[in-house]
Image 1 (tube, helix red, strand yellow):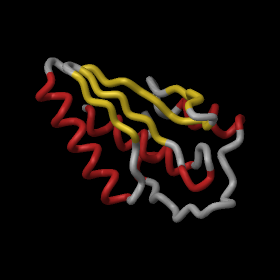
Image 2: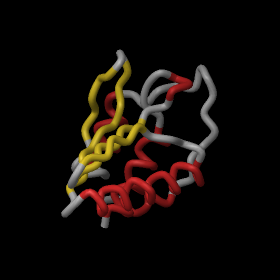
Image 3: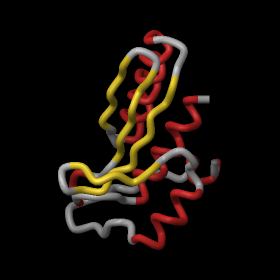
Image 4: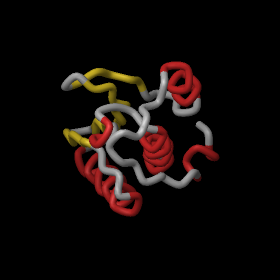
Length: 113
């Protein structure tokens, strides 16, 4: 995983900001192994499921990701279950993917260990 991507600051994103284009998205995905682009509700989103030994570990991870999201003011959808958590990032204000989503995915991968 690219540590430099995880260290980039998230930029303020407003309606009308451009989404990441396919070529750039392909390059950024290479920096965050395990993540994939899915289409949900008509929007491209980054998604990854993280596996854990039990519910407590999955919940602890969810809470760490929540703290990262609050710090960056960029919030994912997280589904926490016994032994796993699925995390999805996309930028609501532009209806798709922004570089911030890839940055947050890299940070999320770091906290997963």
